[in-house]
Image (cartoon, rainbow, N blue to C red; front, side, top):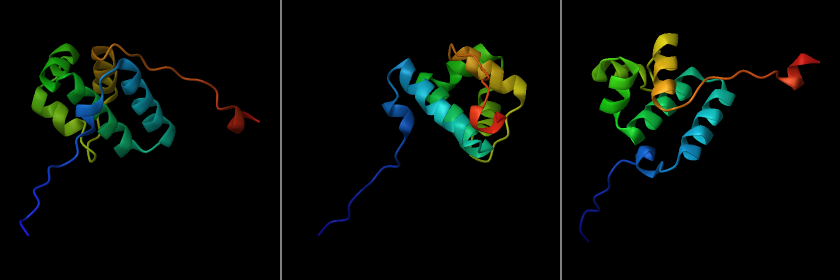
Length: 100
């Protein structure tokens, strides 16, 4: 039997609608895990084209790849720039479970 060739899964290839990006990022933000948030932003940016998002966000493409990796730690400026480049904005809401 021959060797089976596989390719790594890339979620960016399956994000086709703006709602997909919103759902992914909301899940990441709700997790509170910085690595997941950075990785999810990277997936969203790759789904649109990293070069295009980097140019719109005013960031070097390679620096953006690094910042949006699972080990990355994007600055607030980078986070806001990428969200804006994706046509999104950051919004806060009260955590009613914690407010009581």
